[in-house]
Amino acid sequence: MRPPLIPGVDPASAPNDNDLTISITGTDFTAEFSDPIVLAAPIVSLGDNVLADVGRINSTLITATVPWNLKPDAYQVY
Image (tube, rainbow, N blue to C red):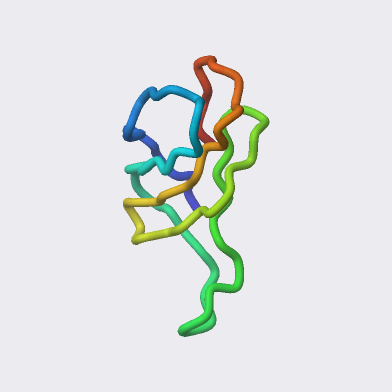
């Protein structure tokens, strides 16, 4: 299995005073299914911070919630 390629995160930046849903675009996003139940949802991290409410929309789009108190910085998406 290839690791995902992530060329985009929207929004790319935002204030950290509220939880924020981000959209992550890329390729090869996977989840483990036993139709129609998701057995293993994708995991998304910004640096060492695992994000909540991760949802795989399809193989090219994932959403996740960034917590309101995350330290302002530049992060790698994993």
